[in-house]
Length: 146
Image (cartoon, rainbow, N blue to C red; front, side):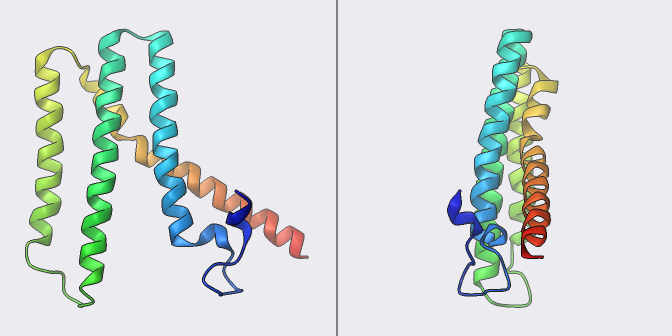
């Protein structure tokens, strides 16, 4: 992670660890880590149904993150102040698809609903980890600059 401490885009005021690309990369990696750690803990302490629910919830969270990321990139790429037509529908449909998959999976009896929901919270935990990392790096960088 040595590259995270270098300035980004030639802007000497903004450290590289706060560059949007670096943050996105770390959040994506953190989601994988959170899901993997949760699944390992569930494998050791919970039943198979709960573990499978975490795997499915984590997979849905990763899909949702990528889908949201591409949707936001498309919206921002238009360069308009108004969002393109159908943008709100895409966000609603995205959540309806995820909810339908989770509901159907739960109805099969092989996936625990609470575990699916817990897996869907992986991005929130990943963002909290990233916020703690950036806060720590910001504080230590300021202390080193003084």
